[in-house]
Image (cartoon, rainbow, N blue to C red; front, side, top):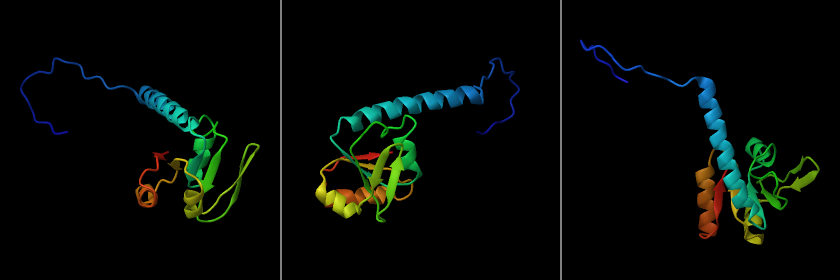
Length: 132
C-alpha cells in the first residue's frame, strides 16, 4: 500500500479482523473443500494416488479426502510398504499403475505436480486428475 499525507481528517474507522478469526475462517473453508473433494473421490471405484509422502498421510487420515476410501492404489517410483491404521499398502511404479488401472489419479506431491499431471495426460489425455 502507498499512502500520501492529506490535510483531510479520516472519518472512517479501519477494522482489521484478528488472526484467530482469520485462521478459523481458513480452516472452515478448507474443511468444506476437503469434504467436497472427499465426496468426489468416494464416488470412484478406486483411486491411483501418486506420491506416498506427508501429503498422502495427511490426506488419508484425520478427516482428509482419502481417509474413507478403501481402494487406493499407491504410485511411487520406489516400491515401499505402508500402513495407515489397520490398512496395509504397497506402492507400485506409476507407469505400471497407469497401464493396469483406469481410475482417476490423486496427486499428493507438492513439488512437480504440474509435470506429473502432464506425464499422466500424455499417456492418457482423458484421465481425471485431482490435486491434493
